[in-house]
Length: 310
Image 1 (cartoon, one colour):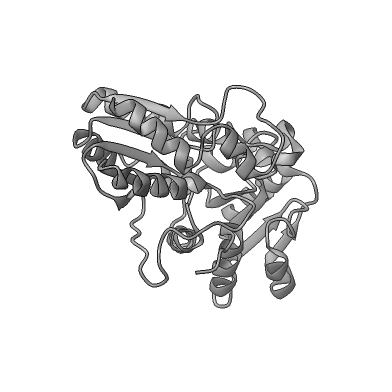
Image 2 (image 1 turned 120 degrees about the vertical axis):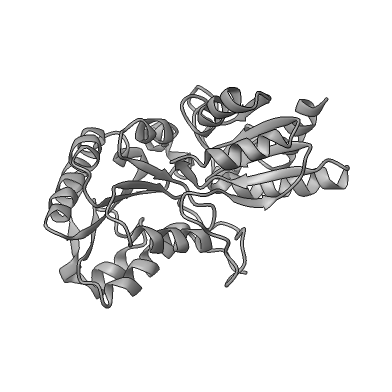
């Protein structure tokens, strides 16, 4: 199956829905090109708002439209959406509990070569800390499609982070196991539980295959629903494993690893290790180069799993 960028799938799902649902409005902060929303803007100009490089206005306008009965999808680079407009996300979207879906494009280190100013390595922690704000990080375009379809049916705020580049599919066309706010079990095993989100799910799955050849059975959980965290699945996976390994494209504090450690420590104590980006400006390079440098690849995850099981 060909690679597809998750952001492209978001646009395609919304365009299909907008054929009959005129309450759908997409908003961009001079990001229609990078967000793959040019086709939406051209096809539905009356359902599209361009704010220019004004992320705070983007969120406030989206919230205003939502209060008028619109289904607002605000698209902007995750590095700016989660920082420059944080107060608007907190007050206008979450505190007011408005139907605003915040689409953070080019998340994590997608803008690798542009450096720390364009990295969003703190957004999981920041957005998860806001009451009423849900946080989703889908792993491939097929899961992204199911998530957006589900979000179209509710009226609560959410932050959805996707990467910039096309990614390898995890699932198969026509066979996407998806349940809202429930982690997907990619593989099952009783030696180690690997819990990942976003672009880290594919290397986690590949790491499980490497470990399987060595006789090590790994459960891999696709935790696309970072908040609300699927605690039941975390507990079940941890209870049937000797150790838990979390993998995320995020800083080491306040993200998926921190959340999982809280649950495991409270409910079924196990050794937990969090693989993440470092607490420092990351190297300059492509996403792959960054991931390889910090061991956020199949080989690195497999190596850490072996270490935890020794």
